[in-house]
Every structure is written in structure tokens, then in C-alpha cells.
Length: 66
Image 1 (tube, rainbow, N blue to C red):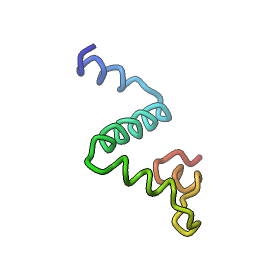
Image 2: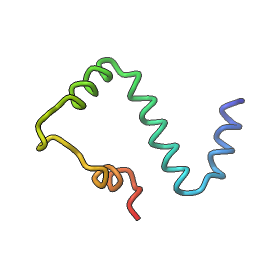
Image 3: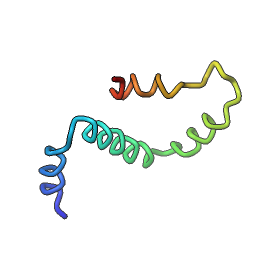
Image 4: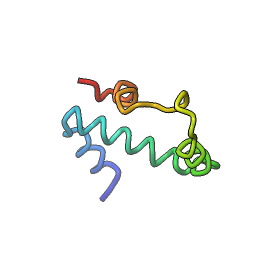
């Protein structure tokens, strides 16, 4: 499948699916950055609640808030 075909199909997505695709593409790009996996592991293992983020915070940040 060509990039042009993917872009045409993406333009037909619902708003919700378009946001989900955007988040996925950002995560793919970030996962290729040097040190990303190590930083994610460090954050996942963080035991200090002041550094935690709620699901609601993420929803607001990425536009899933209804």
C-alpha cells in the first residue's frame, strides 16, 4: 500500500479514529528515538505518586475528553 493510499484512507476516518491514529503515529516516531525505551521503563517503575499521570489527564492531553 502506498503512502498516498494510506493518506486518502486516513482522511475518511471519524474524528475519534483520526485522533487514535495520530496518537499511534506519534508513539511510533517517539519509540525510534534514542533512549526512549529506557526512559519509559524508568517512568513505569517510578514509585512516587506525585510523578504519576491519570488516564483522565492523558485523555485531556490527547483530545479524547468528551
